[in-house]
Image (tube, rainbow, N blue to C red):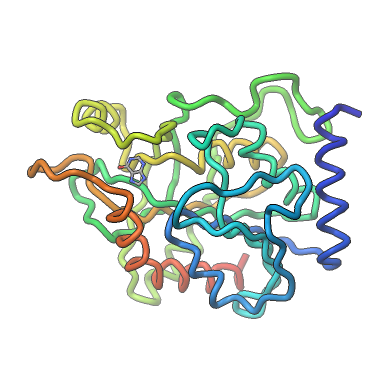
Amino acid sequence: MSALMVQLNETVNFIKEKIGTSTRIGIVLGSGLGNLAEVIKVNESIPYADIPNFQTSTVKGHGGRLILGELGGVNVLVMSGRFHYYEGYSSEQVILPIRVMKLLGVETVLLSNAAGGVNPNFKVGDLMIINDHISFFTANPLIGKNIDELGTRFPDMSEPYSHAIIDKALAICKQNDIHIHQGVYTAVTGPTFETHAEYRLIKAIGSDVVGMSTVQETIAAVHCGMNVFAVSVVTDLGIRENNNVITHEEVLQAAKEAEPKLTLLFTELVKVI
Ligand code: HPA
């Protein structure tokens, strides 16, 4: 068995002992979007610091707990706080929790993030369902020896984000009068926000939003055969007429304001997937 599988098994066994029950749905909460954890009926909550091989979230706006609970009456395993490449963690460390979820029996992951809008039709506070991504500016997390126990060497990426789940999410948004876009998320490493020229480049290559997370997790999830659904909250506008600066505080505030829409969407979605 590879060293990585040994490590994964150690983490999985530790969590299994603590939480006992298995769950089909995993959720990762993005920057400033931790409040979903408040509406969850928590059964178990484990600080990342206690979990072998987990890192700790070093970023403001990110919790640092793995929660097993019920959302809308459905069992979910929630990462309140994620690990980013810009924190200095390796790609392997960033995606470890996704692989752990898979080995715990999770079949579908719901990811959320804060992102900068480059589609000129987007406004701060809008939601966007990610229907495709561009990962060329970040390290592919599968670089290295393939872990055959998890998946194939050359994974197909023709549908990283499940169309079936997107359709269900669109129906929920329609029923609940939630205005939502669909589009392409381009991943960058951060931690700098982009320059004007970079935002223009990102728009020109076909992106609607840009952000510092999610795509490595999606690739890892697809590699090991999980379904992925992901939503961005547009927290700032990269393509803008005025020359305002972007701050992390502004991003967190916008995420907080948009959060109830995201909470409603995830709560309804877990009931139908
Ligand atoms: N760029 C990159 N990442 C981000 C942004 C942005 O404008 N906003 C929130 N995360």
